Length: 421
Image (tube, rainbow, N blue to C red; front, side, top):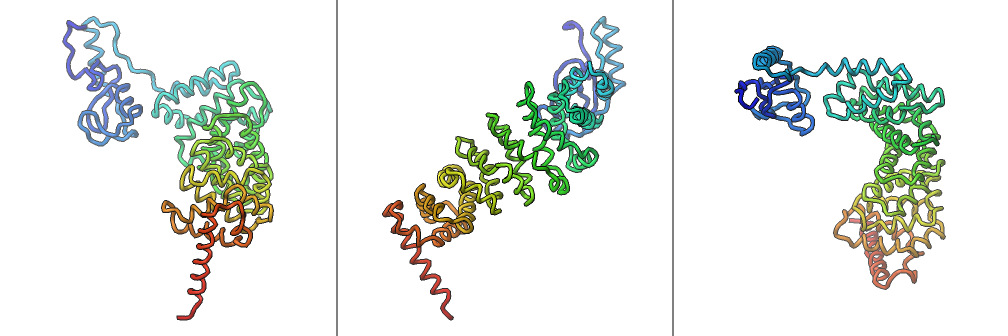
């Protein structure tokens, strides 16, 4: 091959090798299909590597049949045995794999092969979407659910469906849910499974729920069932990794915007379990998600009651202020505001001073790193229970002095504001 001069236009501009499957882009340049697809989908490039003109991922790649025939004829004339031959169209391969899913002996093998194709690149994943792979995987999952049987291939089917739904539009996802109203029931069923590799299947189910709920319609979110939240709470106790916990937390956060869902979460023991998660050593994102959900749950009476019943709840809020992020500080103060306004029993107020909540609020009011609104919120909490806290021996002399001055300033401002002009 080194002794034969290869025509320059037979060479791919990217790989500098003879093209096996020449395709022409919208910029008019011909490349080998594998090379240009890697450029677009693996390297996430958005320009033509030759002209530098825009070349979006969804650009049409037109097979250059004339050039392919010239390359093949040239290889034959020069005695080159490895004659370039394009791969068969992916859609035909996918359709055959889907058709053979009806054979129980081929289900696991075919689903694994479909998953491998989907994971290779974005083009493959879109091809599988267009071929109807999501519907086929949902049908497979629903069949297992209706039989109450964990067939071989279910774990792989859930993983493949997750890959597919990530790239599916919100409208298509809504349509898929409308056509298959037992999807959420079947995923809830998977969350309750206790079989070999059940944690892996549950993790895939949680990831799917997370993707679905971010795209689901209000009608779907309003019809969630108590069993879903009960099983997510149990999932938290499986000793799983932070990434999986975060996916489950996002499922809950997506559902929190509906009051009915918050009540079901409280009844499932979610508030108590969230405090347990928060008392561990979670990463920043886990802490922010936990605090966000707790804020929603504490907006209802039962949620606050469950929250303050945990002996470490107030301490958790206090500990997290100033240690994670301003988002966490904001949510912690908002939760404390709800508790101090609606659930301020003598026991709770005493706990707030003993674990250092009052001192932290005093520091926050003096902070230069927080907005006026949050500092005002903290000041109102301090003012609302000043008769209990201002003389407490649990507060340092410095904080007690600041507390007294702050109350005095608030009183002067109140008198000044009420005076006629």
